Amino acid sequence: MSAELQQLYQQIILDHSKSRHGEGLKEAAEGTVAGQSHQYNPTCGDEITLRVIRNGDTIAAVSWEGDGCSISMAAASVLTDMVGDGLSQTELLGLIDNFREVLRSRGTVEADEEVLGDAAAFSGVSRYPARVKCAMLAWVAAEEAMLASR
Amino acid sequence: MSVVSTPTTLKPADLAIDNQEVRRIRNDFPILSQQVNDRELVYLDSGATSQNPLSVIEAEQEFYEQRNAAVHRGAHTLAVAATDVYEDARETVARFVGAASNEIVWTANATEGLNLLTYSFSNASAGRGGEPARRFALNPGDEIVVTELEHHANLIPWQELAFRTGAVLRYIPVDDDGGLKMDEAASIINPATKIVSFTHASNVLGSITPVAELTELAHKHGALVVLDGCQSVPHMPVDVKVLDVDFLVFSGHKMLGPTGIGVLYGKAELLDSMPPFLTGGSMITKVTMDGAEYLPSPTRFEAGTQQVSQAAALAVAVNYLVETGMERVADWEAQLGQRLVSGLQQINGISVLGPPAGIERIGLAAFDVDGVHAHDVGQFLDDRGIAVRVGHHCAQPLHRRLGLTASTRASTYLYNTTDDVDFLLEAVAGVRPFFGVK
Ligand SMILES: Cc1ncc(COP(=O)(O)O)c(C=O)c1O
Image (tube, rainbow over all chains, first blue to last red; front, side):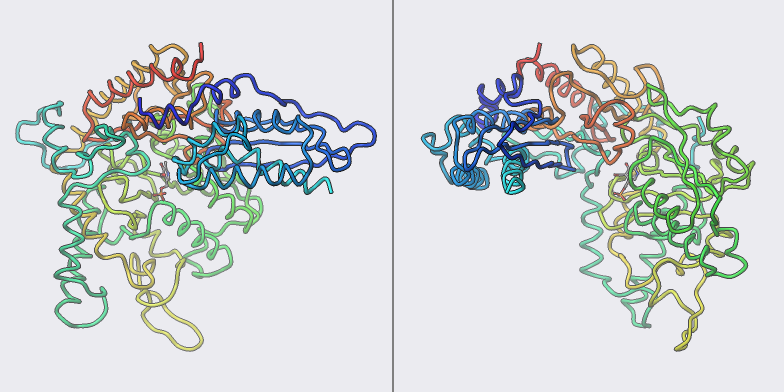
């Protein structure tokens, strides 16, 4: 098996694709606001519904339901963990932009682990242009869900 | 089975194809000797598009180097040469499926052939084509029948036609193995049925449909029969007169030919009374500012400057198949198909869609890997140089019926060896361990 394939399917990705964090849509509690987005990739059928719950400017929770390949499911799970730290809206948008830039770089932009944490494991995806959409699915959903909560 | 040999010349020895012959065949296909991801390419996606022998690739080049001109226009030497090439190609393809030349309409692909039919019928429903076209007109309450197996290309055009005309679209369902429920077909096809359109071989299950039975049912009620031959014409002998279907569509790129060319066969008396779909230059006799009169079939359906180099190359592809012998091709691929399915069935966690080993199928099999998404399976196989198709293969309703959103499909052609199949099987056995699925 090639080094690229190992790079693509890092253990952390395989683990997240099997034990998925944030699966199951959460209801918004009193005093919080929610926004939701549904994303679908018609070429492979990957699908996600993701909900962002906001407490003022702080992202209180991300939860989702979906079905798809290991990359798309792991990316949703990792995103859930990262947001669990109580990011602000601007911080989340920055994170999404950074993730997108790395993925679309065809391997030319290094992932900064300081910034992306576990999501840096997805940098191997950038060498497989056909899989970028898989990794981005939940992240695009988060972007839209947050905007929808405004 | 409702498939009969075309009167082609068989190989002198009439021997079955074997791996040794396939290795010789492979030498004719330049693309097959390339490396993918530092591995020998194992091409198992011919169901999506087939590869081309050098003679086909050269035919297009030869046309552009020596004969390029618009056909049926102009009296200069090149225009005549181009027209000859174009019409000879039609003759070659006609003979290949047992039709007459004027029954072969060039299209861009099978999808366009089906759209040509549905839009022509739509125009007939709007009164175009006058009295002779009335038999194609659809009215509210009329019924169109397809099956649950269909490729989107043989579903959506009929949905749209139904929306436009008020006709009702019905379908023959499949059972859990993907077999057509023929007992239900007998009541779904009824006196209100005007059109029955179905695939000859499933591009997902590899199964072959009972063409004779369905055609008889349809004709009993006066309905027209449209056959999608995308997965049959490239892989087995098909004779339209024996099958007695009214229309047949197929695509050149799935039968060793180039992209951009496909075929619509129609019985001459039907085509000649159908109104055109695309209109414009080259398909008319007389034009005034108020209207136009149209040429007979097939020219009536070939508006605008045509795909001549592709037609020339498709004829070369057809000759390649004829020289190899379609019976022999079908036998070899049936063998590969059985090897594929029986091998897949023995791998833990793999389920094959459609009929199990031992039941007739073309050389194609789609499968589900328990716990691993098809997209990941395809990625893993690509890493080994194996090209397969992943996704719903343009058959979402069928996948939904089988409880899946996607599957992995391996499809063979005359240039695949049993080694290709074995290599795939070995790789598939490694998928679940790699992804850590127990
Ligand atoms: C059964 C079947 N019908 C129709 C089509 C459509 O063919 P094309 O895309 O060449 O028009 C295909 C190929 O994808 C097919 O397999």
